[in-house]
Length: 113
Image 1 (cartoon, one colour):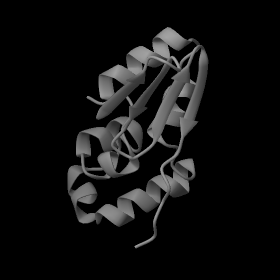
Image 2 (tube, rainbow, N blue to C red):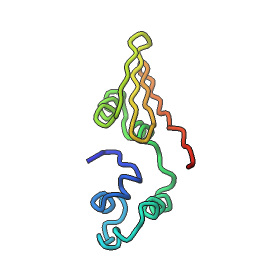
Image 3 (cartoon, helix red, strand yellow):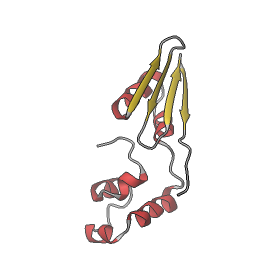
Image 4 (spheres, helix red, strand yellow):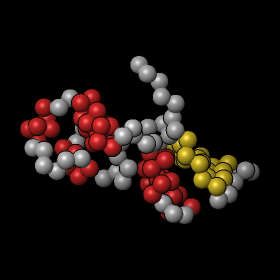
């Protein structure tokens, strides 16, 4: 299971919903929610969703652990040897950039549709 599920991931899985949001909700109650309603309930409970890259940075205390977590779930990885920079891109469009020992989380630009 993804260590950093998005609100959309949780809204689509009763098992994740029980683990991260409300273990007392029945599966029937969960299935009665629309995806948007389930996402909104999470926003109301936990606030605006942080990007995957930001959550990885926040949950790790060093570069090695951060890189290991990023390697596990990134959908794309790029390394530039000249600048000693590694970049991981995640399903939410956020990116994690490590240059030497500096770690930066870059949120994806959100486009309202």
